[in-house]
Length: 405
Image 1: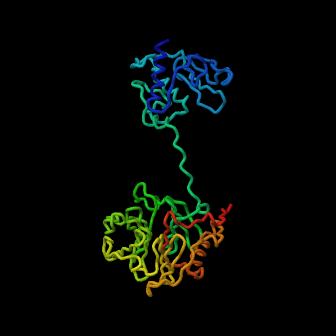
Image 2: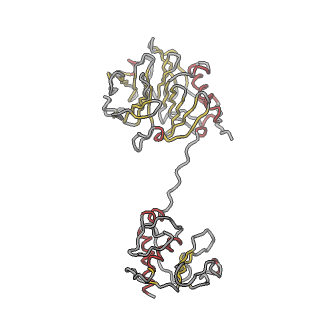
Image 3: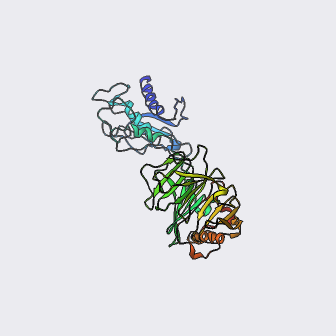
């Protein structure tokens, strides 16, 4: 019947209009969905695959109006839609009379099953289990439209700290160490020698701007707040709440940095002075007494830290009274009181041969810092900071890392 075919086409069109699916009529039984009239005890069309006898009987007028088989992974499976021929049907797409059921609505519902959708509890949904009294106009609600969309690809697996080939930065504050890599952070308990994570940095600091890339530098100011440099923005973060101070973030330009500023590292010294190294060889000193943390003055790197070469990628303050500057291959131990480099050496971590079971992670990091500064293990007790540039971070792939099973 051409009217029935037209109504069936309208039902398929509703699903194709709201999805990437397309449908075309097949003149043979070699189809994905077959619609047929059936009564009482009835048979399947594709008996070789679906079985000869349909497993669900019809019951005459009323009650069950139609049924359909959900798709399976069985080879050659065809979803069959059976419509009870004993029901009073309105076979057109226009409004149905009160004493008849809308074939348009019923086929739209059953085709949804053939496409893999199940019943839901939303009365406005065409996939609601009970056919409403008013079945016109036939339309999909937002749930139906969302359900028919292809599944989103699974998110990329979160990195495991022990499997990373580098980390971008380490920030030690009180008894906790924060290790960052791209958009992730691990929180390490210095007392319990355990770590949590990874957490998305945006979960730890939900106020970060969209599409940020990484944290390029951070330090703890004398007030206890964290100054966090992320791309072209600076965040003043209350610690340990990790809440954003009012009026922040600010752009680098609002703090007084030039338009082309690229942050390399930042540190608050033992004297309480805060310096930001940018563009390789320039230094901006932050006025910690200024509420807006503006730059008080600019100086060349050599004038502020004599003996420190260009190419600094990270700075951290340590409790031995020294500042440590990291470049791509070297570390420089700087005494801020004598303004001299007291020692320097190759910053090559492969000699450590680190093994990285989770329980021993803290000890490995402590050993790393202690080898650099030649201190005992028990010296990692107070706040310091150390952030690595994304292109020059600590490479862990060379350490023969193994995960504890």
